[in-house]
Amino acid sequence: MLRVICKSKIQQPKITDLKLYYEGSIGIDTELMKAADILPGERLQVVNLYTGARFETYAIEEPAGSGTISLKGAAARLGEIGDKLLIISYAIVSDEEAKR
Image (cartoon, rainbow, N blue to C red; front, side):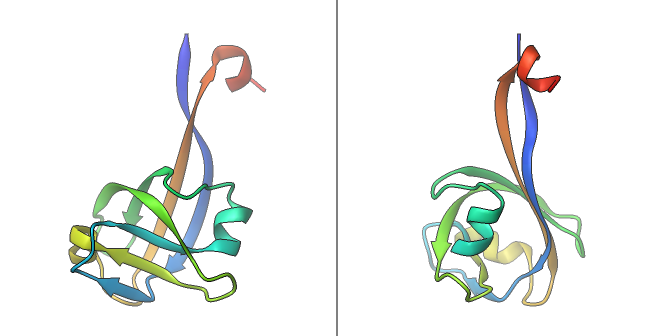
C-alpha cells in the first residue's frame, strides 16, 4: 500500500506580494524552498492562518534571500500582504517508508 504523508512544511511565512494577473502558483524564496526540500513545480497545499483558506498550487522560485512569499493568480484572492501561511508538501511512500 502507498500512503500520502507530510514531507515538509514552511511554518508561518508572511505573504509579501500578490500578483492577481498571473497564471497561478505561489512564489517562494529559493532558500526556503531548499530548506524545506521543495522543488520548482512541486504540488503544495497552502493554508492561510488568518482566514482559514486552504488551497493547492505549485511552487515557483523567487530570488534567494529575498524572503518573498507571493500568491499568484486566483490564489492572490485568498490572502493579504502580511497574512501568515502554512506551506505543506507531501510525498507518496510505501508503508515501510512511512514507518521510518
